Amino acid sequence: MNLRPNNPDDLKLLSTLLPRMVDNQLDSDEEQELVEVLQRSTEAQVYYLHYLQMHAELSGAWGMADNHVIRQLNQQLPDSVFEQAQRQVDETAKVSLPTPSSLQQFSEAILGVQAVVAALVFVIGALAVGLFVSINSTPNNSGTIAQSRHGSSGLNSGNAPPAANGLAARTRNVVFTSGLGEHETPPIAAVVVRSDGDPETNLVVGSRLTAGTLKLLSGTMQMEFMGGAVIALEGPAELRIHSKDAATLLSGAISAHVPPRAQGFVLNAPKAAIVDLGTDFGVRVTPAGISEVEVLSGEVELSVLGDDGNTLSSQHIHEASRIRINGEGDPLQAIESGLNDLPIISGSDNSELPLLLDYVDTVRRDQPTLYWRFDDTDGSVVLNEMPGNHSASVYGLEESDDSIRFQNGYARFDRCDVKRYLVSENAIEGLNERPYSIEFWMKPDDLQHATCVGIVPENRTDPRMFLNVIEIVTDTFMIHEPGAIRYLHRTPPDVNYEVGTNAFTPGICVPGQWQHVVTVKRTDAMEIYVNGKLVRHVSLAPGKVNSLGNFHVIVGQLTANETWRQFSGAIDEFAIYKRDLSAEEIAEHYQLVDLTNQNY
Image (cartoon, rainbow, N blue to C red):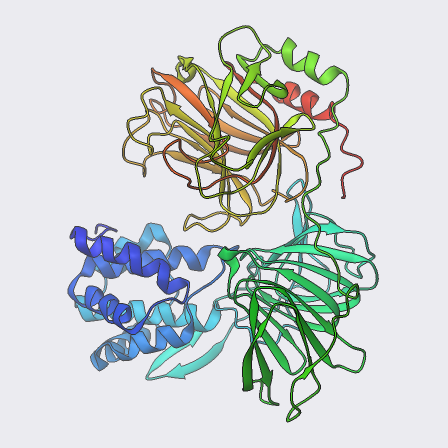
């Protein structure tokens, strides 16, 4: 059976509604639309099952569907569906989730449309109860993932999540079981980006955190939540992390910066919940357990909570206001700002890439076709360090209000509302007719979905016609670890943007740190190297490797036609080779940069 609905309107609806469903954004009309699509199309039901199964199998997934939303959806399906599901349970004695490869066999074995929907209800129920990470759940047994900047990961001893097997609930004759198995990893919620303290968990820059409790004995730790919020925690402090969008400060002080993409981030404190409305704010919990909230810019919605954890009262708190929450039943108290008693969130520093003397000579020795160092530039043209006419033009320099500039020997990009990027003045001839390599250093500001490099055909008649895309990926519907680096190769470039092969790194991209990225297209494979080491190898099918054509290079955003996926941060030592660099050459380049003073 086809895993895609034959009706293009149904496919379009599902493509819109399913992402909104797993993000808990469906309104009542959209829920009804989804029910109607499932009821009229067997292919839509199987596509729905396949979509949710992919989310169920993603160990690093986040934002699973809210069980309240799913329950409302289930209640709108016919009662006979549940009877069919119960018969299926009785007949098989034990029902397990099908793998994607067995979806066709699974769906064809169930008689009739209602039975297929029943299977969907059964699977969705399991997902809702077992996989959704609720803010109100008890996190004492939650695991903490600590992952190094080189990509190795493991659960801290003593904090492994318990096996979640057995009966969880029984509703309307449908049995729900827990979704997380003994060896499954909880979703990643945040990544440590700076640390100068002595945390009890011995976390370092690059460590990735799941739901759990963090105790900071002294100093300051800064982390970026995968939803986009950035917080600085000052010790002694204790922070309970719930998800990529929520945390609770139990003691100590915290500052939060919430960019537009993370709006709605929730920070709880004793007797209080602070919901961001687009702002910077700070929270301090005194040793006596009294919460103080200060809005530094923008506004928040402050709720006073009762003993049951629900809101007793709420109000907007505006910029330059500091409020004390003394306890249940007591009025909110306006107090003077504590000025320097909140931690400072550090932005990206302006330090240059610390090259050793031999780095440039070694790169030149290895004969790149294009080598941009960003040292010798008048602000509008970046010269090529190698023979040949492959300098870069700076587009949008005036319109972007200094959002692309050159300082300390690198190119600095800031996000803005207009197009700004670097583009090769002349196309590279025959780039994809043989192996080639792309090399650069980057220091991203954050983990927002951002394109570092795009390789496009010379004519660029359609902005989706990429040969390559190299980008940071976090908020996508593809299967990968959050904060990964994506390398897309598409041969030949095609107007159908769904065609192509992806390679994703383990989640090793760390904001505020210089990191070395090399992508290599070999005769039969594509590879990604990060900090001198091979982190991903993906084989390419015969006939899907080389193609004719000349190609332009775009650096700093996805296309020359839109402001999509703008990169924010620094890029340096950008080179393209019309051959495949060896692993030894890549490691040598990395070792010629001194990163000992980075904040690791």
